[in-house]
Image (cartoon, rainbow, N blue to C red):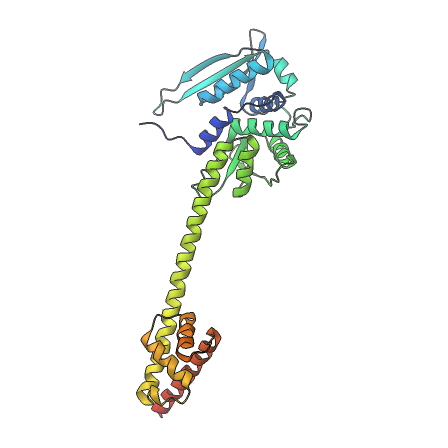
Length: 319
């Protein structure tokens, strides 16, 4: 059976299919290596090692390094012999010191170099790289809209949050929460999640998110309207039952035909014949019977007068 592809995975795979500018891609690599990579020394040579369980991500990083630096990384993979049998792909990049220096990456300080994120395009690239390395987003089928990037340094999480807010094309209001050993930068508002996907350039997944979200919200509105209609119907039915009870008491003791008020007499007959009519429908029927406009407020006033008369009749019976 083929494993179900998560919404996050689809977003990341689209991200790996986009053709970025060099400035965007440099910032992208700076963030991805900062979050995902680590520097190691073998045989006196420095190397950057990036690991992922997604082959498309590994391939994208591989080709991006080759494009920007003309360096062909080494590629390897290993497979766990556990129940899920996960495969981990490793991209090993030589000349690690040079690349880290060029991208101004610090594995000690949490600061983000201003030279790497000097434009909106570069900021978008940096944010996208961090998301590819450690981000996730809930499917819009879930009413709990949530997008996050989990980082392992508090200071870096603060800088990253400020960088998101610095993006000029859209207004973001990220928050930070500590979860186990990570500091999670997240967005909860649906529109900001959509804007984030759009900002990264994931047009297909942005459209899918919006389509599903709109369908969900229309469905939710429909359910709320149905509930409202049901509540209104129950309210109308309960009110009609009390009104009919009042009219029957008056008819039993006095007789509807003996009522001196013509409008009260006509309305009493209409209500007895139409126990499901709303105030609006009662006003329409009264207008037709009398040949003159009768408003809902007038109907309401007459019904109150009927209730008052019924209470008087009840009081007289008790005496």
